Amino acid sequence: MNNKSPYDILGVGRYTTQKEIRRRYLELCKKHHPDVASGGKGVDFREITVAYEQLTNSKKNNQTSPGGVNWEKAHQTSIKTQKWTRNSYLAGFTITSITLLYLSYDKFFQTDHQKRTLLPHERKNNSPVS
Image (cartoon, rainbow, N blue to C red):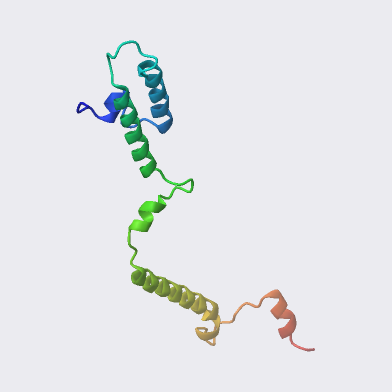
């Protein structure tokens, strides 16, 4: 075998899709297969097959699942769970605190001279009896 790259042997570019690589491989197989080709000149059929296998294996290893996540790569990377857990608790506590402060603002931070506007269902219950 010579020192050509698999892309050069198949005659495709580096950013070629899997479908185009397969199409080019089949074209070369029809042309250079030992049962079909007359004489042994030109490209060695084994080189074509090895180049195709190299490209399809490398493309398959880099492919992602339909969801867009490369799960094999994701399982290999470590996640700092303590950091994520601490940050999640902190974010949850912050959101809960802000929500409680917002809901209790009228009750705790209202001065005597401010009057709260009553909602329609509160007006009926708080109307003065005549």
